Length: 510
Ligand code: NDP
Image 1 (cartoon, rainbow, N blue to C red):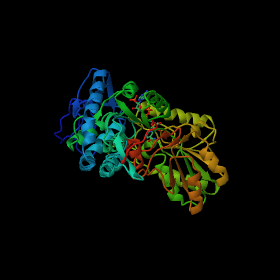
Image 2 (cartoon, rainbow, N blue to C red):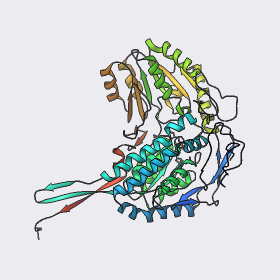
Image 3 (cartoon, rainbow, N blue to C red):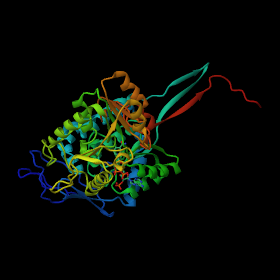
Image 4 (spheres, protein in one colour):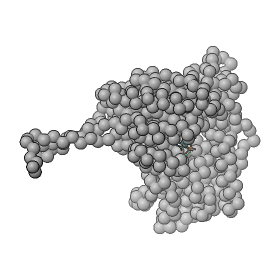
């Protein structure tokens, strides 16, 4: 890959020569050098089918990885299995120190990791430099700090007693979506490793690069070989990992259809699961809301990462009295979006991750028009290379329309009208999904009443899409099972063993 005319950086074998310019004064320094990362080192094996890595801003192939063969899958699982007992036998302080060291390295290298994230996903550097390696580092730091605090408890029973041991599950499999490849790898690896598990992670085939850098940095921080492994591939590789008897737990971030398959496969082995799946979340804006804040919330909840965020509030219910002011300000602020080269720090809105994803979103836009929604702005592909779609807003959307029911996973906002609280809350909950929900109002009691009534795992009052590591994140209904981040994640990566202790003689009936 070409970085810039002054750069001495040489393309490692994984990367293809391309004319792609990164467009600002950053330098590509270190990049992943092979398709997989197994047992503490890059693992090149071109035996599996080739997976081209396409830069979404140009449509060019910038790198090529290979799907894991059965031998690579087996090597990764064997390494994870072999490494697990010794990793679990280390003290929490020792494990945590390594995770925190990795967090420090990530922060030091935030620039180059962000450049890579932008190449992998197409998301603007303006976002990746503050939201991806940084949030991944937060997870490593948070769970690294927590590792030493993980304990069981003592339960006194007269003279006898029971104590519990918090033990790891064993080998965990992580399977990631393509929208946050660095963050997803660390949201899964950090709590898993803190608890003494090992992991084999399979990134989405659309964004295979960033998880390799996570593995490289963890290793540099002192992680023993085999504790965190990365293998590439499509769904078939994920399915092989889940089916393997050596695996105790699967954590998936992906769509509901994939979640059903993964959950079913895990169930046959009675394996633990965490499912972070899709959504069609409501965002309710009352007449008394601050208009600028509500517009900011709607922008953050629909157009960040070109709308490719699972928790997005894509059904925006706006009360009659504020509707015109809201739509006016929204249109004005969307015109201020800087759409362009995502590596340019001034760019605030980038391409979609792939041509396929863009076509899916365009299909939904056509459907919205066919079904009678009013196109307020956007709606078209941009006339330039890459997978750019205009930020799109539909108004006068009815609850029954396809764009109000199905997850689009693109920059398409549906604005729906409502009259009062009693009417809007059941409508907001009338979805099979339950990932997130938000409300903008100045009425304190109404805000909390509605947060309590929302059928969703993650709710927002006068904000949208915050996801700090300290707070549990996850969905209800079809949006998922389990929680990532926070102390709650520990429950999903560990198991309690009860040990009964008799202090006196033991009686028996015969
Ligand atoms: P997919 O469901 O298509 O894929 C998710 C991952 O699962 C990919 O790595 C995929 O591999 C893998 N996979 C596919 N089939 C199987 C299988 N049978 N067994 C094991 N693994 C399999 O999701 P996308 O990557 O398209 O991501 C978008 C979806 O993810 C959206 O629905 C979005 O809402 C959801 N999401 C949820 C989040 C949350 O936290 N709740 C966060 C981010 C996204 P491959 O793609 O390589 O074939």
